[in-house]
Structures are given as C-alpha cells and as structure tokens.
Amino acid sequence: IKEFFANYFLRMSDVTFDMRFNQMNTHSANAEPWKVTLVDTGEETMTGGRLKRVREHIGNDTFCLTYGDGVSNVDVTKAVEFHKSQGMLATLTAVQPPGRFGAISLGKEQTKIDSFQEKPEGDGAWINGGFFVLEPDVIDYVAGDDTVWEQAPLTKLAQDGQLSAFKHDGFWHPMDTLRDKRRLETMWKEGKAPWKVW
Image (cartoon, rainbow, N blue to C red):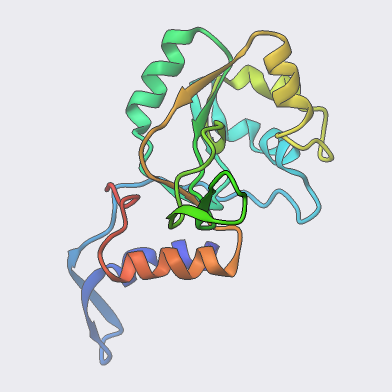
C-alpha cells in the first residue's frame, strides 16, 4: 500500500524521462488533492487497537473512520454535519444491505410460488455500514491492541448515549466474498460505479 501511494503521483502524471541527463519533467498531473497518512499498526492489532495507535495523527478535530471492505456513496459532508448536530462522540452510518438471493412468495398451499423477485433489497433492518464520524475522545473507549471496535467500544458508546445513526439510503455494498468482488469490478468496468463520487 505504501508503494502504491509513494508512486501515485508518477503513475497519475504525463512525464518525459531524459535518460542522458537523468531528468524527469512532469507535464501534467492528474492526481487527486488528497492527503494520506499510512501507519503500521501491526498485523495482530484489532480494529479498536488500530484506532488507538493512530491517535497522535488525529489531532483534536472531528475525524472519519471506515473499515474499507465495502463501497458506498455516503455524502461525507452531510454525515459530518449530522454528527455535529447530534452532539455525541460517535456517529455510525446505518445502511440497509442489498439482498443476496432471489425471494419467493408462497401461496396458501405453501408449495405454489405466487411471485418471484430477483435479489430484492434487504429485510428492512438497518446495519452498521462501516463508516463513522468520530470525536477524538472515542479513543478513551478503546482498552488496547486486543479491542475490537465493533464490540465493546460501540456497545459502551451506545449505553452512554454517545452513538447516533446517520441513515444512508443511497448505494452501499460490502466486498466480503469473491462474488461481491466480481460484481463490484464489473460495475466499475462498465462505468456504473455509484461510489465514485470524486
């Protein structure tokens, strides 16, 4: 990952290499205006522990956290505004997962199919979409490297009345399986990637 970012500017630029004088001229750069900090938090460190280990890089401002194993078109600006309006330490983005299987409706006999719907939306339950807006004090809820963010810290934040839900009705899709990966890659290749909002 570090090598990707180390070479990102070069990959996104039109350049001329002058081999005789060992020079490189950049003609145009198509790089995004992003500032990225990569921190080695250790292979065995759990999700909460990773958050605790990056504390020094966060500062004292509101910040965002994501798991990175799914894609969405969450409006980050609106999520941050919502978070600040709630006055809580943490805001979780709540999503309704897509259906994975075709659904059938059975008639009275319970053997005759009345209707079929290919991959309907989820059952209506809201789930953790893996994107958060947080205040630095949430790190006090993390005991150490073995802490799983999705367990004790989120449970305690909810018990303390410090966890709000930003409901996202737009696109959200996990990438938990090879099937998910293939579906999302196809969407990207076909130019139908609703999560590409930049």
